[in-house]
Length: 239
Length: 106
Image 1: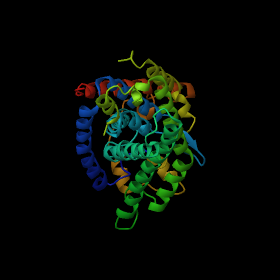
Image 2: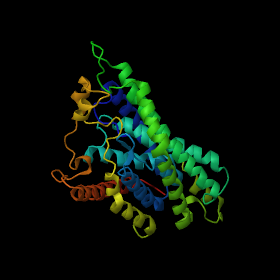
Image 3: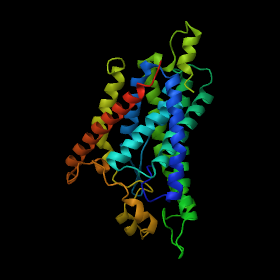
Image 4: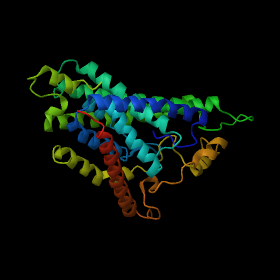
């Protein structure tokens, strides 16, 4: 899902980068205001986890590959804004040091995996979980579905970015200048891979990850004794 | 930093050590093909002009494709490069998040 340089026209890549700059600014502000100092190591380990999980390429029949991202798990644990910063950090390092994803396309990649994915996943999780506890079976199921849908919305957005380049940017002789396949091919191929394979893996990673954290460190999922209402609100209000 | 959530750090360490499993999938992800792959592909079969212009925009990747340059001949070499990449990547992520974390007021 890491769009390399050259697959997006600069007319697409640069505005997406311009969109991300204020988004990162807001994310820093939100995290500054809502995150507890003791949660910073959790964001660090979470962002590192996201970096690593993206290295686990899954073989796709037909010679392709895909991977999970971990963005929804971060969003559930720390809120979508912190997830945005954590995943964006991983993606920018991947582009600069490992050539995984382009530099011009950093905005596009951070929008797909660092904004669309954690925000959609976070709100789906909240919606399904309702008032159940974060360690409950219902919450784990909510995390599973949120992970699945979060990754698939990111894949859909990526495929739309790909496919629109074919439709929008052609040379005088009609050959595509950037991404070379039609929109419906891009959407079809990306969604087939992520709906059937990468999505279920992301779902498992999200559900098992939440279950592991809830069991090991209940305080991280807001399962402290609610002695103090304000304190409890602090734990749950990352948005 | 590591003491409080020791179990999470251990889990991360295990993921780093296991990451060469990701090398088993040898196929290129959709839309991430190199120029040679595009040219050879049955579906595409050519290198789009604009794509060729920007494909090599960034040439300063120290560990391109999570490998140590010149060390990709065998699976073992690739696996070592992959683990080294994971360690370097994780270290950089931790440094940047720690710096960002200084902004947190509590």
